[in-house]
Image (cartoon, rainbow, N blue to C red; front, side, top):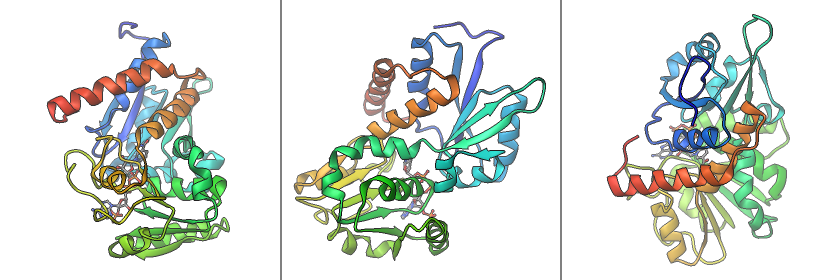
Length: 297
Ligand code: NAP
């Protein structure tokens, strides 16, 4: 690994909380393996300071950033341009700073969650095609999921279950402009809808460390013939996935999405393909340490 010196460049993870994230372990291992003098740091940024944080990335010479919970939509308002996918989702998980001679950087917002989400779901396309899909949550990740399903999976219907009416209306209005129809139900009705869907996606943080014994759905709601996809990756085996597997469902955890979205972001920042083996090894080590030690950063 290169020593940190005056030419070291930084990439940030911006969000709140960020202490649960495994992205620093994964990206730092990948940068080192690729021989790049780049480091990845997690920075807790409250929503009120998102604009200042993005401007600071330029002043401090950052190469780029990832954006996580709960900033993915706010960030879209503070960038110079949006990639077509970020524009279509209305959510940003990756920032790329492009610099010219002495000018302030041009900051582009991109969304690699769409590609990351699809990477693990493509093998299940025949189960999803022509059937109902339910998404739990109406935040930044849910928007990537809606767009990804509509673009590649051709479900018969897409329903979002959310506790905030404002958030779900905003999501529905956004996708209506793209001719993507989305139905909505209150979060309390999620279990009724889930029972009749081929695919259920958890795009809420429910079940994430440290509240690992909680599930967004009661046990037994999802069973044989259904696919359940939990975007939560810490822990990998969430309560939701364990319950669904025990009742015969096919379960997809959030780890493959984490690696695939990271690889796409890595390429945008560096132009280099992310070394897959070292990134996965670092993730496995970080997860093992987490389960042995009970969390932390
Ligand atoms: P976000 O923008 O903050 O959205 C979270 C959504 O979950 C919101 O709709 C929120 O509702 C809802 N929610 C939170 N707690 C809830 C509860 N107790 N009951 C019902 N709804 C609840 O976050 P995000 O960026 O979309 O991320 C969501 C999850 O996906 C996180 O756990 C994140 O780590 C995970 N994720 C994983 C990957 C991966 O690579 N595996 C990628 C992206 C995201 P309110 O608006 O009412 O708060």
